[in-house]
Length: 148
Image 1 (cartoon, helix red, strand yellow):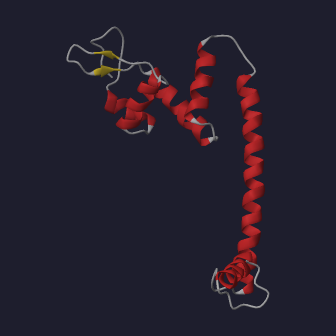
Image 2 (cartoon, rainbow, N blue to C red):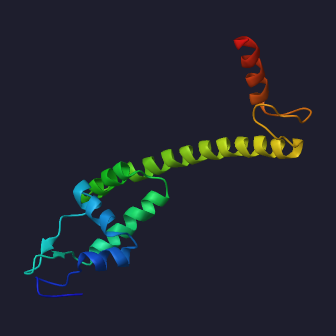
């Protein structure tokens, strides 16, 4: 950490490494306004305050929870205003609903794939297994007859 600008600062590579992001991500977040544009050192290097690492870590954690960058930007902006709002709680509840819907979809997909494996299916369009659980074989067969 350097200190030739008022207070300690980190250079781009240091911030990226400590936050676990690459330099392109760091610059992109700057352009999007997620992190403040840094001051410049006397040599022209970007000079980030150490808190930037924490902010980047928060951004990445929010993304892992399913928030888009746009949503993260809005939540950060709300937080910067300094007064509490129900935004995070409401958005977290919405994310829970989205996750539940995805879990339902994935469970349906897993069930279908398990049926395919158990039935011994060998083709999407010309499956030779008895009681094929895939609707695709019938659809493909119907289209072939329609086109004839």
